[in-house]
Length: 119
Image (cartoon, rainbow, N blue to C red; front, side, top):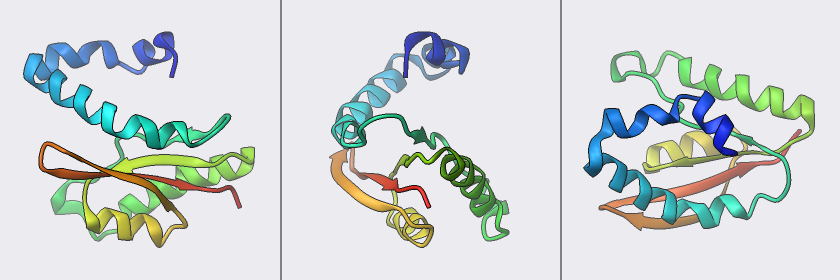
């Protein structure tokens, strides 16, 4: 993502909201997942920061969010890429056609990069 797009997306607020410790953790996670993301060649959709509150899980909201991104990517003929940090999420995304590109350890978590080819 280019710097202007990152800024427009509000990423400039991250250091203010996360502090130095939070930014250090984000930097470490990005270093682990960057090699997976680079495996997706050419234009693609990056499904970033999808989630639902615990109290709302199991109601289909997460599936709707993923469907919104994947359907638009399908229309454009582009793959979708995402990262996740739980085995439950890996299973969730696999059911929706995503395949694992790679996994790496970061701060006690296994981070997984996944891609879904357009349909």
